[in-house]
Length: 170
Image (tube, rainbow, N blue to C red; front, top):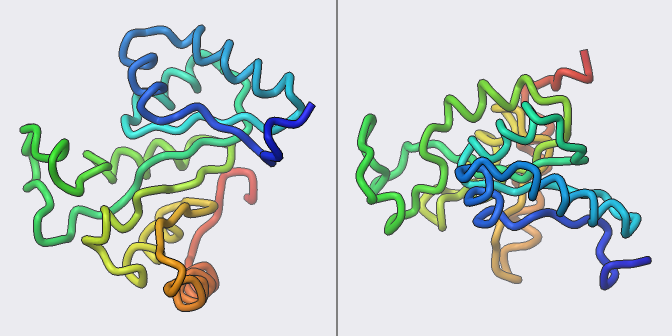
């Protein structure tokens, strides 16, 4: 069966975050098993690293992860150690990029980094390079139609210049 023409399907990040925080990893497993039963690759997206960590600990059978990643080197980023709700109202979608990078290097599944430009706060040249250098296999970038050609070239350049290996490449 085909799920509306999709080539792959992932569990929405907000849902995975809530299920992971509640310790309901079995529900994540049921959802990804259903996706796989439809003969498409199944993934889990997350804003919170915990959602991916619980999937890995429980050995949930997913094909890929979609995880937020961006530097905090932009004008309105929360300062180091800030645990306020600023991120909920600002562009901060990745609360601890170093922790994400360190953990994702241990994961032997493809990783799609998203929200890499922090809602436009980080230019694509910097955002794309950062994501690929830090281990992302792919990026998901929200762009306007008039940005496609330029951003595609920026992504090609970032991939070509990235000094990276993934655990399964070694």
